Length: 79
Image 1 (cartoon, helix red, strand yellow):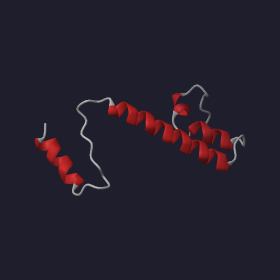
Image 2: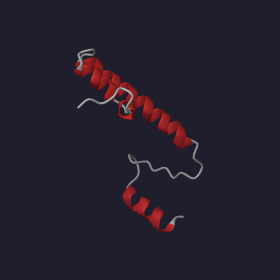
Image 3: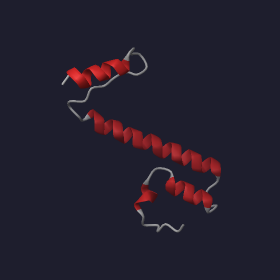
Image 4: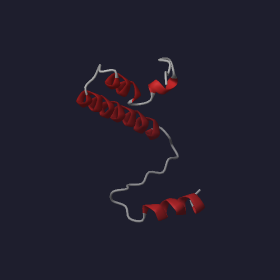
C-alpha cells in the first residue's frame, strides 16, 4: 500500500515516527520516545482547551468512589 505523504493520516500521533522507523531513519528507542513526547504534548493541549469550557463537569477518577454512578446520575438528572 502506498499512501501519499500528503495524506491526513500522517498527521496522527505516531504515524510519521513509525514511518521513519520502518524506513530505518529512526531506531525503535527514539521512535517510542518521540511518540510518548507527542502524546504528552497533545494531552496538554487538550487539557488547556477543556479548562476553557465553562460548563464542563470534572470527576476525580482516583479519589472518587462510584464515579460511574455519579456520571449516570448527572446525565439523567443533573442537567
